[in-house]
Image 1 (cartoon, one colour):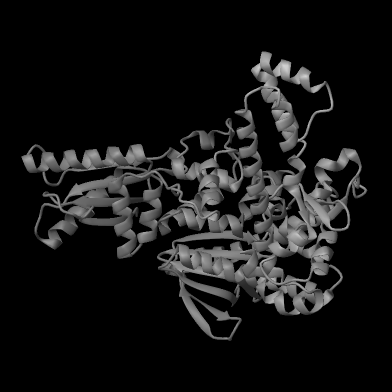
Image 2 (image 1 turned 90 degrees about the horizontal axis):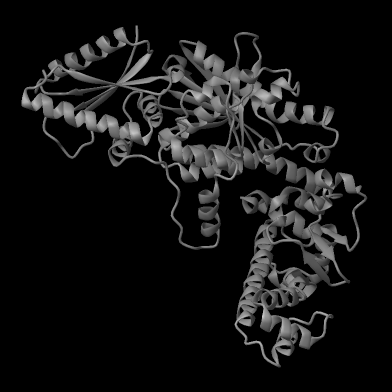
Length: 578
């Protein structure tokens, strides 16, 4: 992703700075891999030394490989090691640490060789100068502020001599890549302007592309203009997605929090201004259009900014709207939940008026891991609800891992207001899969827990893409594996009883799912009549009867045939009350 973002800057940067910015991520990766290889070799050499017999040459062999502790005398260490296995292991590991610094040491020649494209060594030295601290240099940061203002975040190398550097750890450049890029562009105004413009274009393109990939049946529009009849003003929206009866509005904001705000300094005005730019204004843009689409009952005309052409959406076909703000940097990690942002006075908006915020990298992770379009819509819907509450805590990957396990079927505790569940660390399976894939290793992708039958039903709903399929699919995603099994078992029993004559063909089962605050109702029937009109009357009658008895706005009806077939269902439809 970083390479795609930076590639258009390459020609001008090569001319002005002597390097291609798009090569930096590959370079950092190569540096990290070199350090990882050395670390593995070091561990192997230590393990080998642990098998050496303790004899008169033992201390000398260790000294030749790693070095020697200055005190006490070698014969003392030999005697201690013979008497205690813990002392033997201690001595080897302590001696091995004398060479451990070499793992992270990089020479100018080595750094130049690791760059994936040709580059002059003097240019590499200039890059390293921008990203390095000297030994003992604290960059002017007081000790008491090191946690919030750690200079290593933006200068992760330590300079040792004119042609040698140490990296604290291999992944650190990717911890804050944007600031590293900006440090080497600083002072080159044309490149800085091109970089900032590219960030905005790239993010909008990437968000549209991700949503198009996640929702293949969707129509995706970018950079659209429309006039709000409420005030007669023309407004712009970054990405509008129409899929089934859903409209998803995504505002792509490539700005960034001020460095001081990111590190805990100046958190008053600086943080409020950053939240206003990256969360509040995008929320207003997205939710303004979402409200219009939800309230209107006729056509709304839009104009494409790129070429001036127009298109129309019939708002009466839109039954569900979603609004989200997508940032290029993960600012959501630095902010509390939407409810906390509002309550803390960091925004004048109430939590319900703020859009769920997600970074583009986290959005890509969601798209990569969720196999069904319905899941993506369901996840974004539920994340919006969860973000406005105070029930769950954790970063996006942790919450995504919880979703894969539970589908966010969290019961009534979500609404009780007396519980707070911290899921930090739950993303380990996702992390393992992600890093294995990055390394080209085989790894099993974490997936949502779903029974084979329920997954087959969902797949058929999406492949047929009949009217209101997304609403049905999202409703199905509310049902957990245990409830899926229960519904399937009840359908088998209903079919058996109808075929045996133990229950009338007009009988049905009613399956309720979820807490009262967001309850779903499914109705199961057996379509016994060969006549299509009679079957439709059967479905309609069953749906009306259940809607009359249950306080729900909508239900999903599923029909099986009396005799099993290869299809997971015979008929499926959504019914509304009233």
